[in-house]
Length: 116
Image (tube, rainbow, N blue to C red; front, side, top):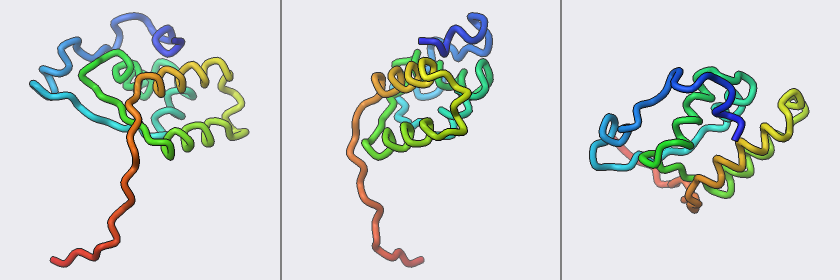
């Protein structure tokens, strides 16, 4: 995938023992925000891309995605203002992220009013 090739190896790397550093004995579950994807594509080598590199590289990080989130990724990245990003780069990043992610079903937000 092209994300890793954008900067020299080792620069800004997250430790290999990520699970021990951040969540001993546990896996971190996360959803990648659409803004992070956009920023990673528009700013190669910067922090958002480095975060995605870490997400894709470390098994201690469990990425989850719902159909709704994937649809948002695709809709936003297909907008005309992102034409500067090559389709190969965009699709490569999306395919890598979606391929790495576990599919989940979104649960509707509660409509119950909570009192203090």
